[in-house]
Image (cartoon, rainbow, N blue to C red):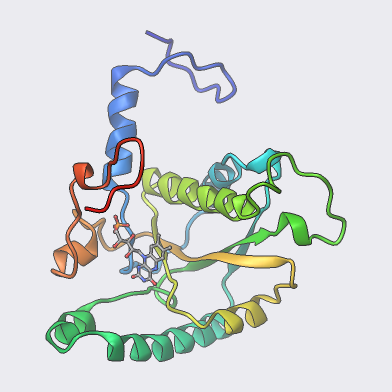
Length: 229
Ligand SMILES: Cc1cc2nc3c(=O)[nH]c(=O)nc-3n(C[C@H](O)[C@H](O)[C@H](O)COP(=O)(O)O)c2cc1C
């Protein structure tokens, strides 16, 4: 059993039963949050969350993620207006018998959350001073995948800090690019709302609302090759 230590750089050979259970509890209780209290996230807490994002693995150790904090009300209002437009279009695509459930869903917390965070990827191949990145060219989207892993680390670290994260994809991407002033070689990966939640829902909100159930693990596992189910 390893000694309890606060030293984060101490080598970890094994995790104790308690640590292992805590880790799986963290995974199981992470939720996408859309209902926020307004109180600010202390700077040191945000720092730890972003450090967790920055600890993600990346292709060729390229670390292509960049974290853009967005607090300006006018920017968030413009993004929220965009959400409203996109959401209206989405509603029209939903079958009649599911329209009411769809309308009941809250799908963002852009203005309620005290902080918005854009996680963007400085595309390896498009950088002005592009250099060889180990492992990137055989699969050029690996820089985007790496950035997704940073998002997941942020999501999990936020959860242990008691901070909620909500991912908002229902936004006009061109408008977001403009507002964030992203140059051509930078791609938006995630637009996140961060803040203390009203509650951590006990299940995904889409399950609680009767929109979609979680499928059992055995339905997503295959052997040796793809098989149609
Ligand atoms: C790429 C991505 C985009 C998402 N976009 C939205 C969104 O626009 N609005 C929303 O309410 N939730 C969004 N979500 C959250 C999912 O709905 C949520 O992860 C899923 O329902 C499972 O719930 P859980 O994260 O609480 O386990 C997104 C999640 C991912 C990974």
